Image (cartoon, rainbow, N blue to C red; front, side):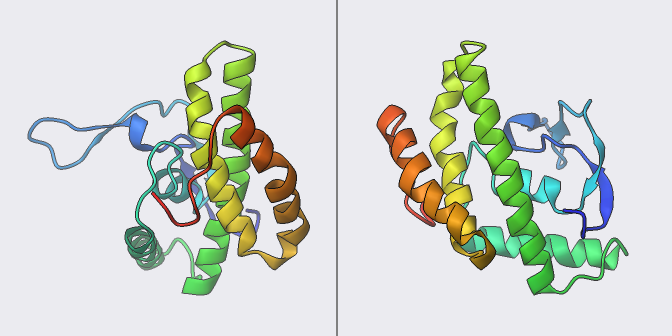
Length: 164
């Protein structure tokens, strides 16, 4: 994340915080009180690898490339497609690990058990991304051999790789 240019980030930019407005082409955005400076891919990960909705991989790739091009044309970075994809993958791993932990805390400490249903999708993003990162091989093996079986036993199965 430190290698990425910093921009203003919402930090919670996902489907549940976007509102359709009558006769408006731009959605309403809520829950922005925690906005800060952060890595350029942070909000893209939040929206495109949403913990509540899984988009088809081809659409996600197209949207990410569009964002990369638009943000590059705006002078926000000079990253090529491979570098930007790597930033996106690593930011996603960090964000999804954090989100899965928050969902568990909300369920255990606060009694908000509805968030448990979002853990399998969130961890599936982490599984898929860590599988593509050779430097995270040991983490991926531990995730698949220890963490995922415990989640599946207590909550339910994770989506298959690349499945909505």
